Amino acid sequence: MKKVLLDLLKLSNLNCGLGQVAFNYGTSLAKANTEFELHFLVPREFENQFGSEDIFYHTESGLKKYLKKNKFDLWHCIHQDPDIMPEAGTKILMTIHDLNFLGEKSEWKSRKRLKELQKRVDKCSDFAFISEFSKNIACSNLNLDAKKTDVIYNGVITVEKESNPLKFSGEFFFSLGVLKPKKNIHSLIPIMKFFPETKLVIAGDKSGSYYKELVKTATREGVANQVVFIGTISEDEKTWLYKNCKAFLFPSLYEGFGLPVIEAMRNGAPAIISNSSSLPEIGSNHAFYFNNYIPESMFEVIEDSLDKFSKNPELRNSQISYANNFTWEKNVEAYLELYKRIIKD
Image (cartoon, rainbow, N blue to C red; front, side):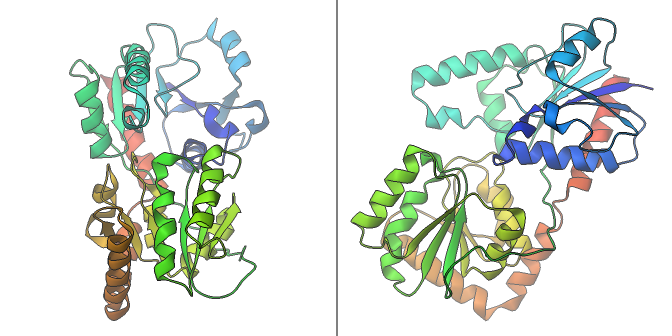
């Protein structure tokens, strides 16, 4: 039986996107019928997290001892910044999520990050990308040496339970993500003056400096009483917010995929999002788009989108149907076929 190792070390932070990817991919892969002997590289606290009958678990320190006498047929880095990679002679599949640092960092820091990533890329035999956008950006900025590339979309989990985290009643817009400038959440705050009876609920870790800037912006714009920061939330709370918000607003500038867009659609919320990076690809014709970030223009887009959404119930039905195509079962099935091909080659 061929041995496949999955690097799931990002489980150490379940509040970030990669942590959620690691958790959901590991969960779905553990349930799948597979011809491979699966080995999961995990933080110590996640040993046996996905069942213990058919999966072998390794911590980073324990893996080093294992590798002295054993070898894997395939090593899957589920993101492009792994803490550990195998020695030469092992086939490596790397999933590249994004090169967002090219737009976020200075030119010098971007070149440095790109050089470091190229060193890791040179060790790999195959690549997967979470969107066509990410693939195109990577191919334009990295030397992949004509290696095989595949696009495999992320999945979205279905959460049946709901929990209301709000301490107020009434209409609200919803936005979420890591509170960093790349998410462009500050662009939403001035438009709240056009919606005096509506609140803006923002979910995300409040420990960083960008959160403080958002609070100052809300005060400066005179809408501090309308902007509600609720910190990190559970899946149950997120589901409730999607299902009960007036609209999901996502003006992010840099996304390799944009998982919240599909989550919002699956839960029936109109998704009004940025027309940047991968978002038009992922949102397709089922989302509404901001063309710029001028408050008056954004207000008009929201008003027009809400009007169209309310007058045509089929829009909601079609977006839910579309979003239901993004499952972790399909994601795992595609990766298992990719594993077979790489090992066979």
